[in-house]
Image (cartoon, rainbow over the protein chains, first blue to last red):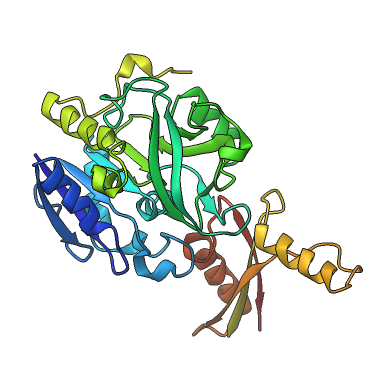
Length: 243
Length: 79
């Protein structure tokens, strides 16, 4: 299977994602320039971390207008897997592929450290290899990861079980002191209603090898591979509650 | 015409930068400053010479690009 990693001017985790896909997972991958207009036969699209377009205007705001974006939107609408990591998550929010927006971190600090996230559901293509409630130790590196959504949107996210990862203690307990950026409901990662588009602030691709400080991120990428191989690229329909 | 667009976080959205600036002002002794909201300011040079057209165009641009409607609102002045 093939990962296409989108490279925006200012992306800086594109090679981390490529390395994880090719050298750790043994899958094929290609770096795709943002001015391209096709996804080169991708099974999975990764929007990597970094500072696309210099974070001009707002994080992720300019990337929405990159020539590759219509192809990504069409790919997502057809059920293709799209994983936005850190700045990639911010791009998905600005592009309207996921709901909400990012604010400056509470405390205004750029947080660059390992944190803990709890897997809230395992019936998505991005978490199928994890156990419900499993706690992953994964690095973050961001100044604007303070997830915000209006109350009605937040309620809908929770009702639809679209929160896939939450910041917790190492034991998996929700606590404000373990929330590194002030995100509402300790949200670290959300998916769309169908479950085929996921954005997360933590960096699973940077946590795939012991030499890099841990392998807890591998379960996310392995889930993606397993989902593509089994053809389960959208969340189990019957598990998505309908109004 | 020139349009000036002022983008700020919505009143319902916490502004950590504005709060930090307010705290700094209080530390400097400016107790008369109750609160600060930080925002962005844009100047658009427009071809039109009609104020209504200028305002409509600036609003469209603000809606689509300059402001993120999830967290921000804006105000426009034209002259």
